[in-house]
Image 1 (cartoon, rainbow, N blue to C red):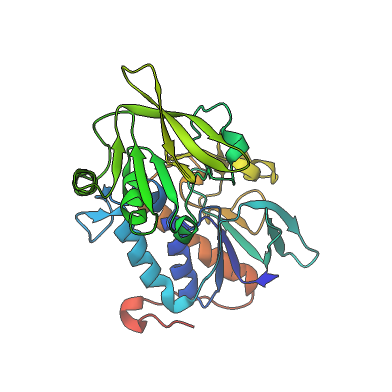
Image 2 (tube, rainbow, N blue to C red):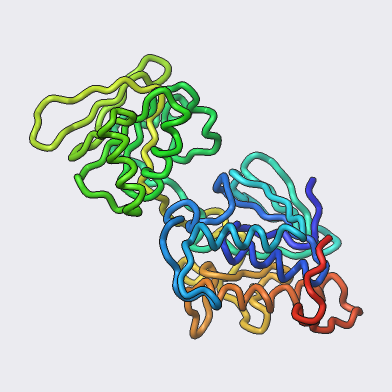
Length: 335
């Protein structure tokens, strides 16, 4: 069992910054996230999207912001349980909480910070009749380990940054990469689009444009996919060991809705004094909470995290006087 001071559910920017603020108070953190890497939707959906409202950065790419946050929290050595969904919370007799994931991994702490952004992200699945038959047998909606596709024939569907980025990455891993997109124009970063086009031109990658993958075939495992091309009646079949439909993720509140918290629509109600919920010791920060005047901005989530850890400290050390120390004077002392 993982034991820590604050269990943070959600590895997006607000969850990561919580580690920094907690670290300044010598509180240890462990982060749980259903996605296979830190960053939340900034990493998974739009890593190359510019963000303009982070203080001190006139413009910063979403992926670069996550990289900077990871560097900032490194001295505080946070733990991570990634690729696992937090399923349940159980309160112990000594006022601590046990958080259990879908894989049975257990974590215990006196404080929980729910920083789940818009909730649990679930993949947007294409409407292919038999797709569920091949899940885990050639069909993946997220890429957790690129080595899984070493020397495999991979077909990727999608036209955003995620599809483009993985197509570019996997071209040096897979034996063959095919990128299928329903249009001739991509939504991703222009530099990535140009690279894909160049690779297609010199035969290092295959593009199937104006198309949708509509058929999957195989005995036990996937061995080919069928593409429906606009204006054509016949299905174009492509040999494939793996099919990766990368159409982004859909946010849902998920198991959090069953944890006994006060929910307003799809957000958790909090007290703005310390962003605590109706259950003492459980806090909600970032886009997942709601209160009068709420603004869903990363900037606001950073503020909420800062106040939340002050309250978390007092729960652990009720008789200890907490004095605000400025990092400009004391610097940053890691563990």
